[in-house]
Length: 119
Image (cartoon, rainbow, N blue to C red; front, side, top):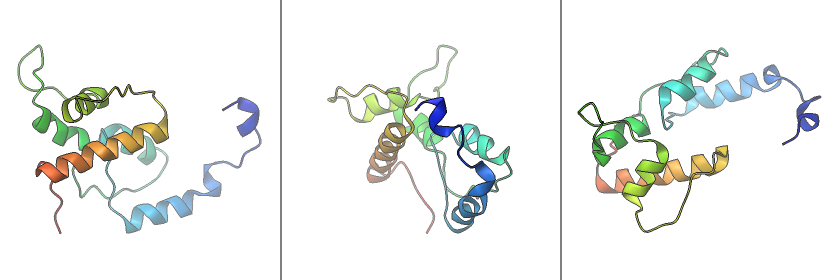
């Protein structure tokens, strides 16, 4: 995306109510809730935090040792490689690609019984 493509775009306030309506009606998670939700909350959004952080569950499911002892929070690539070792996927740091692969990690943990959501 080039600067010129967004230079005259309407600001966040143009769609803020629509986004908040989504947050009000649906449970949200992310791969590192504190980062993603913190970003949104710093802009005035209110987000329900009633389902687990994908990275926090991956920490327990992946069991990657930290150099200082205990398990570490795996980055998305480490979690992907743990759950899908026979793929050649490399994270390309694009929002849609990240979201798709993080959702696949969540679903894999759900299928394995690691990611539990209260009914």
